[in-house]
Image (cartoon, rainbow, N blue to C red; front, side, top):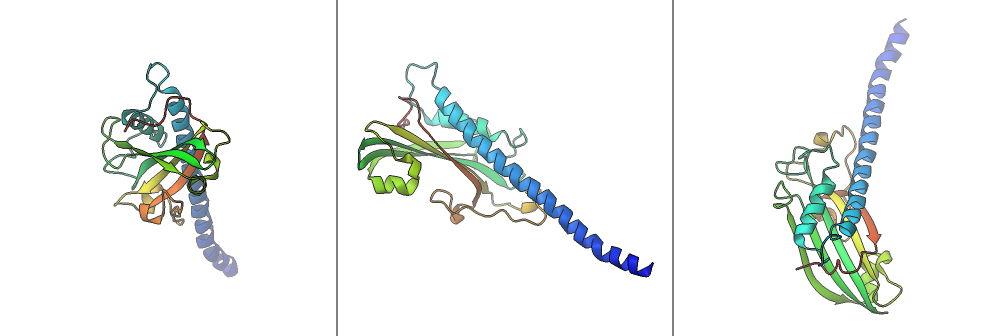
Length: 212
């Protein structure tokens, strides 16, 4: 009887650790799936947002709207906005390219983030200038941005959760696991970003370059 009690006493901590690991594992993949869903939501909204307009060109205001809408899939709440009750905020990066010739591309980058503001009109979003890059530079951004024909366009959308100053893994529901920071060119370790998801689409004609 005493041996059984001793074995039981030793097994309880192991069972608790296993239970916490299972909970963390579920939470980890839940967040990965949510950021993936956000990226696809942005892709869909970018393609449709200008349908009823004569001028299809996207604006920073459009990016504010699609970014705000796409981040609400996390608990359908204000969790991604100040004061960041989950210790994270949401960020989206846009890289548009248009092939000029086999070794020359027009390139524009845009950003949108919930680090400031709590409504579509107040979150931060902008488009940078349009620059020219060679084929090697485009490949270094993402191989799928390489176009086959002159005049072809591609859009790379990168979504991520980023750590706010009050980040604590327990706020996200993790007990044991520590979400690993990303290492790609746009959300590296210095940006405190994780759960990145990238998608490349062919945007409708006239959407880009975005209005600076």
